[in-house]
Figure: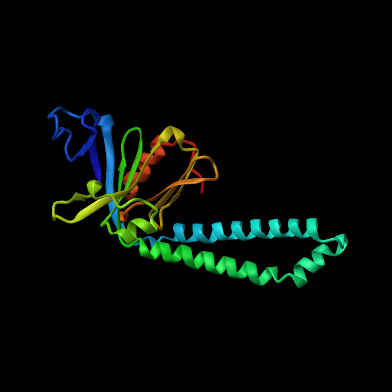
Length: 221
């Protein structure tokens, strides 16, 4: 949803007049605000990340065990053959991969429902993730259960800020829009996915146009 961002109060408004300080907001301070409610386990990017991490972990373990085999195996030229056939490394690696992937998926499932708020202001993108806090949800996200940090919304429902990140447009190396799925992936550096935006269908065109204006010549397909 297109809004007007007051730089003085650091808040979005529905009209070009700040509700906080009462001063007019210039036309170049237009921002885009939206939010989504989702389950982390349904996020394909996070699920793919878990499997990618486990592939790297298994490859690293394989190389490490193979190096140890060459170091301690006195037969030398037969070390690789003994390692592949007699050590049982392949079933072990498969068990490590499956076990680690299942653990990662379990952690995503335990995180429960989350509310993600996005704010595209004139300088960058703010992304905040809120949860209805329990000790189990906090543990699965590796954050502390802090009673002092819990806030109540308008319906007196407790919420905890689980994660917050801000990305300047100048720090974005490239971005990849996905109009069909309503996603935009922002990278910093070139191959590292720093922020993944989920944009509602009704707001996608406005948000994509704002990104295109801010990130000229950085889009990739």
